[in-house]
Amino acid sequence: MRLKFRSLVDGSEVEVERRLERDGKKTFKTTGIGLEKLRLSELVLQIGTLMPEIATATHFDNKTNLSQAVSTLTGLRPLAHFGTRSVRLHERLTEK
Image (tube, rainbow, N blue to C red; front, side, top):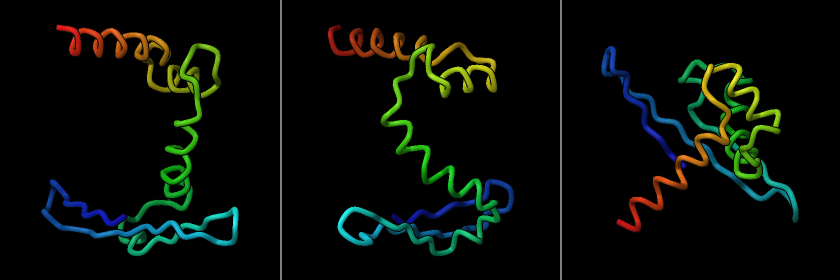
């Protein structure tokens, strides 16, 4: 995947690339090109890689650690509330 970021402050652009490659029969490795230009910590880059995978396998209800952590950190309601609302919104948009 290749992305280009443009600063709203000074208009500068940074292009980065991340590749997912098979490393054996069951494992994969990621390679980043230009990520250092973003001046992000290694931890932030790892979280950006791992969280989308974790989020797809997570049930967003009141009982998960992730849901509680997001609620605590952001001050927002538990994610189950937003899940319920999005179902209702989808029904309204598709049925009416």
